[in-house]
Image (cartoon, rainbow, N blue to C red; front, top):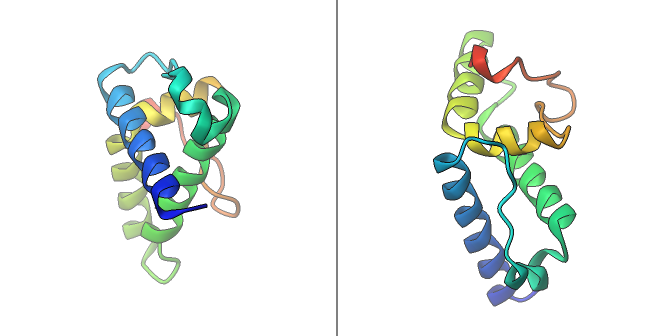
Length: 108
């Protein structure tokens, strides 16, 4: 993947995140112009889940205290609630492998 393609995918993911933050319905935004970057809606969902997993992996350092991990999990779920609604509506919500399932969004 070229730098331009990577940059375009990231721009689209950020656009989806902004749309999801404004529309908490859990509906996946989609534009046909995004098919060159993601193929279809399923490809976009996979990319959103991978981005969520990376954010969690980077920010939930296993060397920190359990209290810090819980605090960071709550912050991540709160700040990315729109994307989590989308993932939840497609059965893809949860913390990355080894971290267990995420509690309901209302608990965040």
